[in-house]
Length: 238
Image 1 (tube, rainbow, N blue to C red):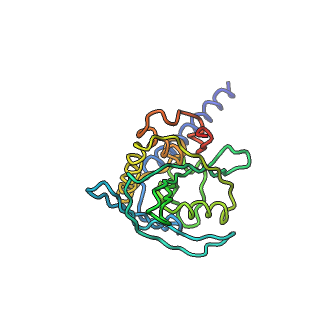
Image 2: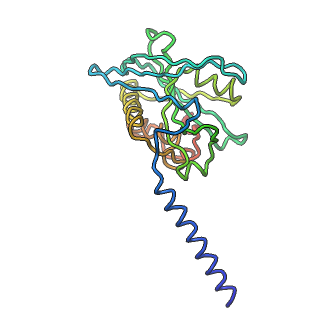
């Protein structure tokens, strides 16, 4: 009898504790004004033009070498979504078993864009200075979500040279006529995040699920449902 009462007491305490955590987390509000880590501190600006073109400002173009950041530059460029030729997705493995990964996209424009031809978009946690990512923290509203527009060179060399992570690249099989709509959706979302911040969520709003949601809105069924969308994997795309 005492054992039953003890178990009921423990269960009640655990339930109350979970309820308190849930209430505290639910009451938190995302912010645009924190002491951000430098690589996510500057938000890209978006100007949607009547012609359908998009002007992106503060596009990151940092230069990296092994373990070092050589320079920290940004640029402004006008992009016509109709000039997108193809779309690539990169997978950055984050653990030796390959269970967790970060993914990002690279839009390939025509040759007239020169060095800005390969434009990357990485959906990331907007970490505060000195803050490190965690799966549990991502589920408990510890990080805002942000869009990093950057050159392919920036996103790739940051991971391979500076952070020493392996990368795998996949070409997405999406009809070209859908690529412009996909790009515009992401640009619009970037503009919205600059005024209305959102929480990153490990389960529902992570680096991969955000990308997949927009891909499937532009081309229904292009990427099927899979457990890897929760773990930020891209191995379903192949």
